[in-house]
Image 1 (cartoon, helix red, strand yellow):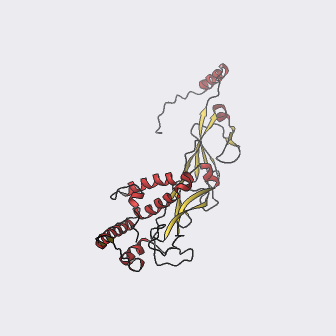
Image 2 (cartoon, rainbow, N blue to C red):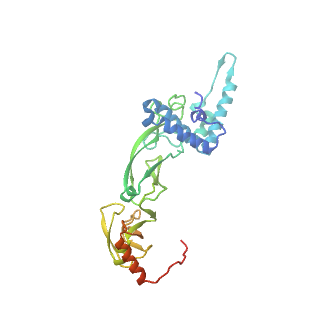
Image 3 (tube, rainbow, N blue to C red):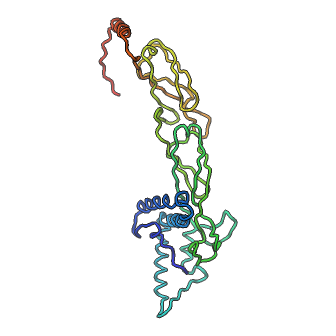
Length: 311
C-alpha cells in the first residue's frame, strides 16, 4: 500500500501544531490555492488542503490518523528485508480497517454507491459580509465550497489509489446559490448543501444602527422647524424619500418612531420600527435678523439652564 498522505506537510505545520495554528494555515493555503485564484494548476493542491484539514481539525480523526501513520511506519520497518521491501495488507485494509471505519463515513451514500468505509465529515465554513440594505431586502450570494465525492479513479475500491490515497473520496469544488433570508442577524450560520456552512456578517451602516429588528438613527431638524412644527424629508434604509412629521416644540433628543420601517423579523412578516432621535441644527448662514429674533426669544424666556444629566 502507498504511504498515507502527510497531512501535516500539506498544511505546512508541525506535527505538534495546535488547532489555532492548523486553522490559520488552512485558511492561508485555501485562499492561495483556491481554483478561482490559482486556476487549474492549484486544483489538486486545493483538494489536498481540504482533505488534510478535514482530518487534522478534528481531534478524534487526528488521533487516529497519527496512529495510522505510526502503524504504517512500524509495518514498513518490520517488513523490510535485505535487498527488498515487503508490505502485507490484509483484504485491502487489514489491521487499519477499524481506523478507516472511524475516520470515514459511508462514501457515496447520496450517489447510491455502496462501500464499507465510513467518514465523519468536517464541515467547512465560509464567511460573507453583507450591507444592512442587503439584509433588509434579502440577498442571494454565490458560493464555492469543496464537497466530498467518490474517487473518480478507483470509485472507493482501491486502497492503493494515488488519486485519493486509499481514502475512497476526494474533495471537489461545487458552486451554490445561497438565499439570505431578510432580517438575518450578524453571526448567523446557514447550512450550504450537505457539507458546508456560511457565516453571515453585517457591515456597519453610516446612517443606522441595528437594535434587534429596530433601526436607530439621528435626524437633523432645523431649530425653527422644531419650534413651530413641520415636515422633514427622510431617506429610509431602503425605498424612496418620505416626509416625516415633526411636532411643534420638539426638543433635542426627542425620538420619533416610525412603526414598521425597521427590519423584518426572520421567518415572519413582522417588521421592527425606525427610531429617529432629533438633533437640532441652527440655520446657516446665521444673519443679523436671526440674531434679533433669537434675542427677542431669549428675552421672552428667562430660563437659565445649566442642569447636568447623565448621558
